[in-house]
Image 1 (cartoon, helix red, strand yellow):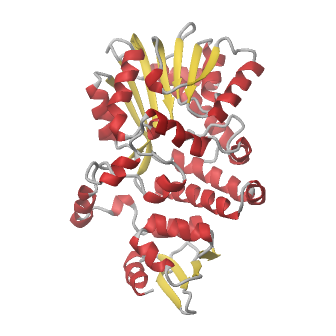
Image 2 (cartoon, helix red, strand yellow; image 1 turned 90 degrees about the vertical axis):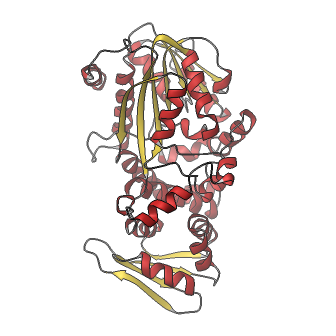
Image 3 (cartoon, helix red, strand yellow; image 1 turned 180 degrees about the vertical axis):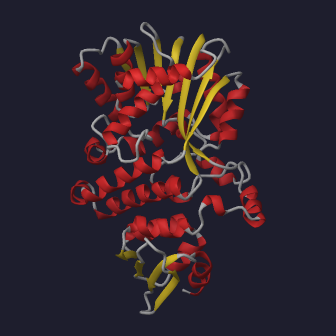
Length: 410
């Protein structure tokens, strides 16, 4: 516990953390904070504290999954929130932290780079690891439309269903849609966005995915709605798509592209986009300079996953001569979304354990809790970036977006 004790005396300044070590001793960190209940944990073996200090995300994640880190007061979210709140991204402004960040920039971390090198065959395997899990699992915590990406909360008190519906309207408005257009949906998930765009505008939509489970359900939904001839879904890598599209939308897929292929993705999108076309990219983003994905997330949740910085997104678009027409940073929205997902997951603990096992449940809970705190305390945000090939493709002010969104939401 010596290494852990020294580290956490410096780390936890506000809020109380109580640690019961495997040797029977109790350690206390921090100080009472109004509105923040104490958090208490127990370690069941002597090696876990050291592993957490040496590799925080991997050490803590595996310890929680394996039952070597037990929560005695508060849940795993309360623990991660306490630790990250004491080290919020906005407070990391001293020179030492800035220098440490600079040293971890890609490609300076060869392993981080290699973990996100997503060739076509590897991309399909990585997608299957996460998205080909049982559809029943996703039904337990997502909204009815299975929107597995950041919702849009016009009011933090809105329901998840309302916020996901508003997200689709927010994106559709930025696409400046009209009847008769051809739309490409890259990373279409279970088909909700594609079906929404067709329903609202009559556009013909091609949705592409690398998940066989998602493809099956998306096609079933289109057939049930009687629009399978207008809303098609294909199992195909974005690099293999051909044709020309008036609009391209990609929601929550860019995180699976990998930095080695950002320019490839941008160039491919430009080649598919009509001369007067519009593209909307919706992706999780990282504030500050590029950094590799943490080892636990890559190992257990998103193999090949990588969160881009805004500078990386911009550089890729510039290389392909895509004109950036609009950028919006959604700062809190994914945090609110993930809080809904986490609480629904916790409410369905027994069903998830029965579906998989207790270790899987703890893994999923740790994933959602860690992601949630990343958006409130860490470097995570969401970016919506609008692109055109020709600067005359859109009106000269953003008023059309607000007008279209009001119409869609009405």
